[in-house]
Amino acid sequence: MQLRCMTRLRGLGFIPLRRNEALDCRERVFAALAHREPDKVPKGELEIVSEMVSGLLGGEPTDRFEGLRACVEMLKMDLVNTYTAWPKPKLVGVDSEGRAIEEDILGIRTVHGDVTDSSIPPITEPEQMWTFEFPEAEVFDTSWTARWAGETDYFISGQTGGPFGTLEMLLGWENAMIFSKTDLPAVKDLARRAGRLFAEIGRKSAESGADMVVVAEDIAFNTGTFFSPDTLREVVFPALKEEVQEIKKSGVPVMMHSDGNLNDVMEDIIDCGFDALQSLQPSAGMDIAEIKRKYGDKLCLMGNLDLNWLMPFGTTEDVRKAVRSLIRTAAPGGGFILSTCNVLTRDIPVENAIAMYDEAERFGVYPIEDRDER
Image 1 (cartoon, rainbow, N blue to C red):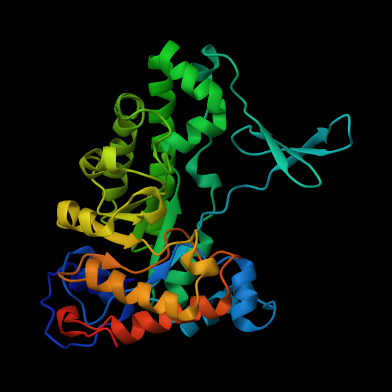
Image 2: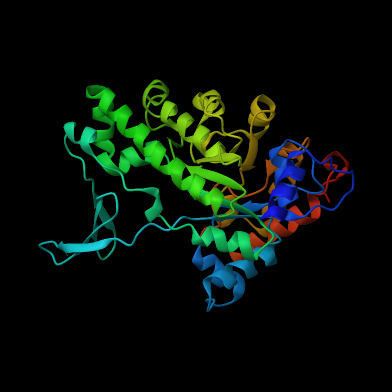
């Protein structure tokens, strides 16, 4: 752990980086987070789904950890995102059609169908928000994070949740929207308490060796935010800001993940104290050149490779060309980590994933301004 702390300081700039110095994975990402140019553009994903792992390896791995590590090595990633394991849901019954019903640690019930599952939120009346009890952070397992931090030299992030997603899970979409207008104090209280739980989980990830905490908080769709920006400012952002501040007491940077169009709330995201933002979904109007120009000195940017058409349907040359264009636009000056705008999904041909990372490794060498398009 002492070595991990030392390279953390180096990446953030407390130890000077020398021009043309070869950096390790952690130093490379920390340099980007500190808005400094590393030796080459760092890269990674929030997840490599199991189907992609099998495709890259030519078959299903016998060991999950070793299989993922082999993929990370193959693609020459620098950053690996890890998840916190929730307690296993318990079976609480079956419905009239014989479908199993499970209940998780938050009291959310899931009805398992043949094709799709459906969820039943635990809170249906406004007064229940005041009395809802969150579990203790201790029941959430961060051993996956600890293993990656302890057995590899990659930059490890640990993922946690946030207040907005929790409101949707506990109330359901309709009630979350209605109660935010009819019972605002109760919704704000619930959001703050949710943020405190996920802050504790984030701090637990940091204590397990995570170099950074990712708050996965999808607040937007393709044309704007799910709640109006004003409602988010009343309900969600105060709780999110408190969560970020609490996580930062562990001495780690904090990244926000949200798909969708965030243009109307970018200043709010910065005000929450986030160091970085992942997704930057191009099909949702997130123009990386404009975002880099306006916010690149305040946020490290990660993502922006299109998952609607480019990665699933483009040719390998389409992918390579897009990677070069993205690096030219977003990487100069540092503050950029290359990834898709979400995760490496099952819809991406293996050859496109390989082309993406191969081109980033080839083309993403600093100084970027000296690179031609070949």
